[in-house]
Length: 149
Image 1 (tube, rainbow, N blue to C red):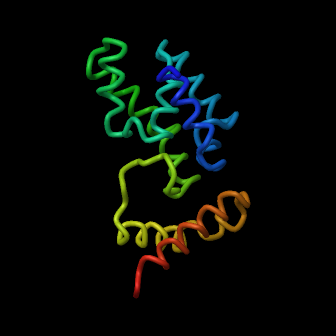
Image 2 (cartoon, helix red, strand yellow):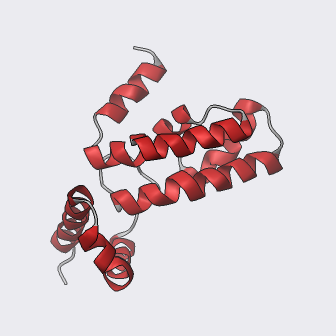
């Protein structure tokens, strides 16, 4: 199996909400728009991020090396990708444990993230998709099971 096939296999075995965070039609359209704007392929990079092979903090360096671009341009592409793909993916997966390791959150950081969602986005969560609600519920119960307090 090639590295590419291995990555696709890992992506296809992620939880559905993680796959959707990087593979839904809306996300693919955003990636396609960025690819057309910058004339580089970003789809495989999204898969690498989704499966935890590439950290979002390393996107600019990855783009700079892979496409031999100047650092400033790579940082601009990274910033756009972060705003249009990564940030919405974080909101849609709320740090699901399998794959998509944006950086490992501490238990305290996860608790703070959950509190923030309750304070700032509770109504949106209730109006949101059942998959997102389920992902959030899973994370809440995960945190509760790990925290004796």
